[in-house]
Amino acid sequence: MLFAVFLALFLPCVGMSVVFVVYMCFLCYATTNNSSGRNNNNQELPDTKPPKEKGLSSAQLDKLPKVTGQELVLGNDCAVCLDVIESEQLARLVPGCNHGFHLECADTWLSKHPVCPVCRSKLETQLFNPPESNPC
Image (cartoon, rainbow, N blue to C red; front, top):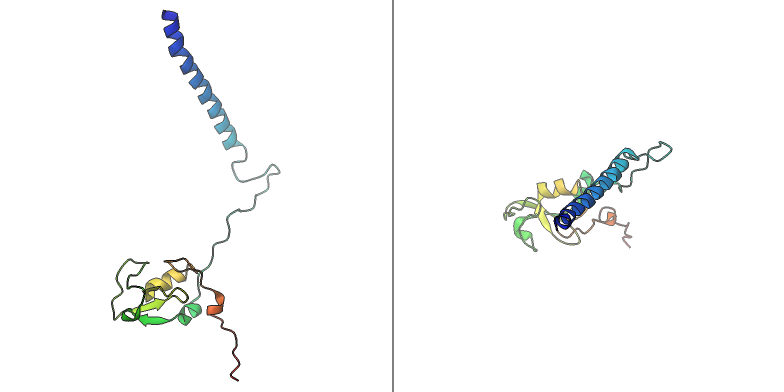
């Protein structure tokens, strides 16, 4: 009886210890081999992250429409700073989706990200370079 109790308590502890030691060996192997982003020839591996999208230039920002807060149609909350756009404040209107933001907030956001902060619609380049129209 005493032997059965000993085995019931001892064998699970031995099994868990073996699993822990094997795990630590795998962890040690993984950290010492190929840990610095190099392949077997000791050459740097290329970066797998996609390049970050650059925002709009100041010339492109100037081409976006400016309105006052009272002219906004889709609401008067700025999604960038989470504050209310007062009726006398200037606001920047994003073409296509017509979302409005404080002028400073929109310029700061759009200079880093070429998408609307609310709906994430991409600002297309044809908005800034309209096709030449024939006056005839």
